[in-house]
Image (tube, rainbow over all chains, first blue to last red):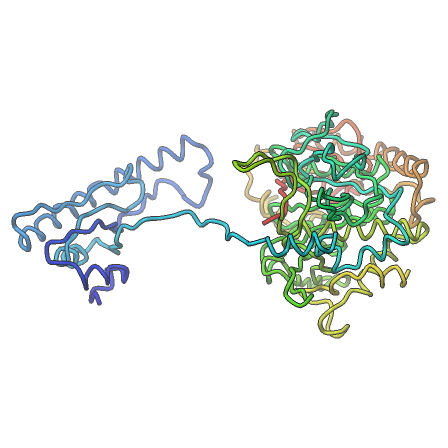
Length: 450
Length: 126
């Protein structure tokens, strides 16, 4: 083990196994004076200012690096007189890091230089690839069942004996939709693109700027795949789709999309989206939708893991949805990525404690439609996706079924029925919590409660 | 004017947005959504609406919002800001561009319920 704490423990195999003259590339971090001409915590947004700063910092660091190189050359010469060891630049020297070649003995000499902070072996880096999931068993089961695991878990076919969501308008504010998909046959009743300037642009045929919107639409109102797997919760519901996540989307785009959905007669608005930072006052918008227009907004809580939540799903009046994943023996657990947290406002009389999510629904390994995607082995029109984005349309679809079955039920009653009948592992005790909220939605029970 | 949080401002602008405007230069403008303090047609409140009722409810919001525009425009003009929407939308919101002082002045108006920064949005899948 290296005695000098400046030498990275990652050198241990090299120190243990290498011969005295074996070389290894190293990265050296050294101390350099700070450039005080500019407050680095201030604004570095202007490119020119940033470049000037980098140049100045590099000029400050250069003499330090040259001294370091000279000292290392001299020290290593006394150890290995026949070889020359130097410290080299990395990039423009904007950072106080340099490259060096070391042997077992010169490594110690390099680390002993007073300006050296740390020496690490150079090593290969790699992309962190998404984990490959084997869906073959799940596909087989879903084909056998004739429906996705989420629809099965929620007992959706039982609801279809009462209604399939006919005449209920579900607005989807997302990346758009590939409305010509066979699974969405005639379900998309209206479509608009909201550009980053907030302008409404009519586009025919419909299109999806990604895959997200089409996948979400499929979970709400999709029909069957060619293998006869039902993917949509409310296959009779109408979809009103606004492409608000196209290009550099901002809150303005979303507000315009919400306003469009209101004008078009939406009963439910699905928002599988999030903001960049916390905005609790968006609760006012949800209040207007529920109180003034009797519209149910359903919002994803986010994929930032337990202990976190994000806007707009964490606004006190949001009806927010977390994700559960399928486990063996017909069980579910809250997906590790699914956000959940409580926010505390001690100076407020109302909503002093906001606990999110409100409910959870299937949001991992969710099979739904996508715009046709050409891959080396063929064209794909369906795929699995994970996220609270996928859990949210399950709840929007369930709300459509409940609204169709109970046309006079106020939105507040539908929200209460979904929360009250949700199934929590603690059997109704100690809920809501930050993982399950009130629990996994139970549409059949919610319908009975209305 | 910086860092002087009145009660009205505190409740109409989120803490994060307030911090962000406190860090703006005096002449730097920010785009924001102003939610107007208006109420539409109360006749349909709490009731599921058919298409015709929805249109009446939307018109009620538009009409109520137009009454507020004069004062909002006046405030914006005073602080070298501008209105970016022609009229309030169905939610009673308008899009504006204003300096930090302009945003603070808007927050003092009785016509204003809330102000949000026009921040970025993104989808929620893994």
